[in-house]
Structure formats: C-alpha cells, structure tokens
Image (cartoon, rainbow, N blue to C red):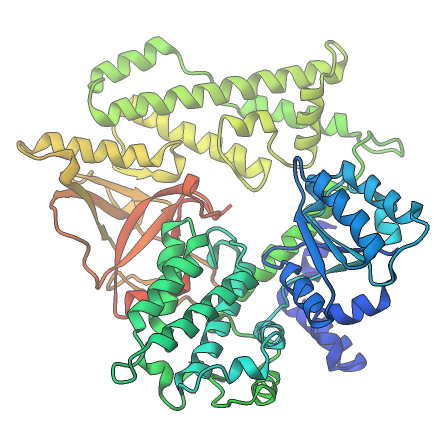
Length: 630
C-alpha cells in the first residue's frame, strides 16, 4: 500500500493529473488566489470577528492597517502576550462604543482572552457600525472552536511560483510609488528588489537544498529594502551612479541578511546580490534567467501585464538550482503526506485475524536481539588501547566513540528484553515501553534510542547502521587502525578531524595547532582499491555529493546527471598543513553535513573542490557533501 501511494504522488504523475483538471476547469484554477482584504471586510459585520491564520513569511497586519487608512477608519492594534489583556479590553470597549477597528495580533499567546473577546461581541447591546475586530493567530490546538465558528476565517499564504508572488508584490505598489523618482534606475531597481524577494521566499520549498534554515522573509523586509533604495537614489551623485557595493551590503547583510543566522546561507544571499545587483542589471536585454527580463516600463499596469506573461511553472534554474531540485521538492512533499497518513493510523491491537501489533513487535525484538552486537568488555578495550598507544589523539577519540556505542547497545538490549517480557505479561507495559512498541511497529526509532544515538529514516536503516558502526570500531580495536575511515560511522566526526590535526601537529616540531588547517585531495579510488594508509593524514569514504556531480578524471565539480540526486564520492584524502594563508578564491568551499538536514548541529567541516565554473555557480546550486542520505 505504501509503495502504491508513493507511486501515485510522484513528480510527473502529480503534475500531469493537475494539468488535466486545470485544462478542464480553466487556467484561473491553476493559480493561487491573491487575498483581497477589502472584499473580506465588505462581507463582514460589526459582530463578526475576522480571524487570520498566520503562515511563514506572511503577516497581513500592514495590509490591514493600510486598508483602514484608505477607508479613513481609525485602527488600534496590540500585540497580545502577558499583561496586554488590559489594553486590548480597553480598546475593544472604546471601539464598540465609538467606532473603529481593533487588531489583536498573535492571539495564540493569550488564548484565555479569546472567551472575553467573544463575550464582548455577543453581550454588547449596541455596536458601532464601523467596528471590526481583526485577529491574527498561529495554528494552535487549544484555539477556541466557538470563536472560529462565529468568525470569517482567512489566511495569507505566500503564493506559489514567481508569477503569483510578483503579482502579489506589485498589487501593493501604486503608480505614485513607481513615479517616486525620475532616476532611470528606479523602476529597474524596484523590480529587481521584488524579484530577489520572491526568489529568497520560493527557495524555501526546496528544503535544505534551498536554505539550510527556512527563514521567515516577509513583506516588511521588502518594504525596508525599497525604502533604502529610494533613499540611496535621493542621495546619489548622478555622475558616479549607483553604488552597487552599498546596495549589495544593505540587502545581503542588513535587510534580508539580518534574518540569516547560518554562515553558508549568508554566503548564498550575498552571492545572489552580487550576481544580480551590478552594472549588468541596467543593460538593455538583461535577464535574471532565460525568459525573466526586467520590464522597461514606468506604467504600473504595463509591469503587471508583463508579470502576467511570465511562465506559470518555474524551472529550478531560475532560483540558481539544478533541474533535479524539482524532484527533491516533490519527494519532500510526498514524504510529508505519507508521514501524516502513518501518524493517524490506529494504534490498538488487531482483532480481525492475522498477527497483532504485539506479536509482530515481539518477533522483531527477538530478531534484533539475535543480531545485536555483544557488549564491549572494559578490560579488553583498555588492553587494546594500551597496545596501540592510549594517549595518542586518534586512540583517545576511539575510546570516546566506544564509550558512546556501549551506551547505545546497553539501552537497546534492555528495551528489547523488557518489551518481550511486557508482551508476555511478565512485567507491566509502562508508558515508555508502549511508546517504543508503537515506534517499532511503525518502523520508527524509539525516542529513548534516538536520544543517545543518531537520526535515520527508518528503524531498519538505523539498526543496520548500528551494526556497521560497531563493525568499524571492533576492527579498529582488534586489528589496528583502518586504511580508510567510514566517517559517517562516527558520533563526533568533527572530533575525528580535530584528532587528525593534532596528530599531524605533534609529528612536526614547531607547528602550532591554531595555524594547522585541513586540506584535501579527491582521489580516483574506491575504498576496496586502497591497501595502505597514507603516510600522514587519513583516507575517508562514504560521503555523497548533492547539487552537483564529480568528474572522476579531473576531480572537478560538474553539473549533476539528470535524475541523479546524490552521487557517491570516491575516497577523499584529508591531511593538514601549517599555513596562515587564506582560501584560494578559485576553489569552491563545500560544507560537509552528517545528514540531509543542513543545520549547525549536523555540520562537520568543509573541503575544497576544483571547478572550471565560478565558485558562485555552485553556491547557488546549494552543493554540499552529506555523510548520510537517509
């Protein structure tokens, strides 16, 4: 069943089915509706609140305020939270009597006040005809259903696709704004800021390939950027022209960059600004990507007409990514749907024949116990480390790794044994054991295990990795240092690289650890082809390249092969040198992550790749090395 559903939600089938319905119903059904707050307001009545469900990067508060101003209606707002109820109470009673709008922002932070707000509407005998209560809230399981039932509910999700997003942006731009400056650069820069605003939002849908962290870029960032460009043009010396470094800095480091916390995301954002915000932007015929030009038009309707002519679906290359990124996006979407389906399936034991949940988990636990590695014996580990040199950096690292895997094996063994006893009825099935049973039945990793180990897609992958990690450690401690290290199998791969740096530093008199930096060489060999260790440094294997491919002959980055999302890397030789020189700007600094989720906690380090392209090209592609793709 799982595979059948998965096949139904694949990329091509999903798009083909959607296009059939759109062709039948009309093109307007293939585009997201742009929120019209004025029509929403016209449908409302004084005793009907308007509740906005907030979504990432989309706060309607500025639009609500602008609508009130255009209708010449007084609006009073308060951001809800501790101690703000008294202000909200006074605003509501005053506006009910004298007219005006009340905007209660982030109501999910003051849920008890919802009942009071409803009572104020239902108990008031007379409500001024211009009174309206606007409420914004995030999704919350305890939000009162009664308030939702009596309210007009709407959301303001960011539109999907460049055309829809640009349409919504230009919907809030007036002809007066387009006529703000007589400088010829103004309409071009305004469109360019709107375009980069759309790009940084749309890249979120590609997951970690787009941004390591999904930032909440919103309309306030765009408004602040436009205000800066206006100020810059007002102060510009016509003879010198636009100061591109200033604009790049303000957009990449301040306006949008102020939200960015990850160093590699900051590098990506700065790359976007440097590639697009330069003299090339003002040249006739400039294109952000094929088919995405800057409209040379000072008429707002002309700009909107051009935006309407943009493609309905966008190639990932517009965002700087390879076309394979579309597959990644669709896989993530399908996985989200399937995870939701799995999460709502019944948890009770079956009663209609066949094996029960408990019986299935009992057999699984029994099978895992048979395969589970034996626990390490402390005296044997100590003897082996003494033989290899217990105080050498790499052996200290090995001892720390063995201590952690001992803990994992112990917890897994105890849980499995207790589960079997509980299913047999010998001991009580505690809440913790029940959660472990449910997780194992769903092929998930029990929470107790994951806390002391590592993440993985399924329980099967996790257990296989446990066996492989244990195998590497036992070979190392029994037979000596491996020729090639499987870096994915370490709890602390950063510690492994640091231990190697310490080892190299100690081997050279006069070297200081602070000035010893990692270097690398991409070999042509697979793990099985190497029979000796390098004289200095280490060979590492088991990594996957995402966002690009590797030319095995030259060791350089090249474009990804069609429909190949990850490419297994050959063995990489990592060593250390003593230098204070900076990085070669012709090399692409490629981050290494333990898992596909590219967060600071998963970051291992970086290696350098040679490339015939500008390194910026691979920055936009989101190229990274992953120790594990599950």
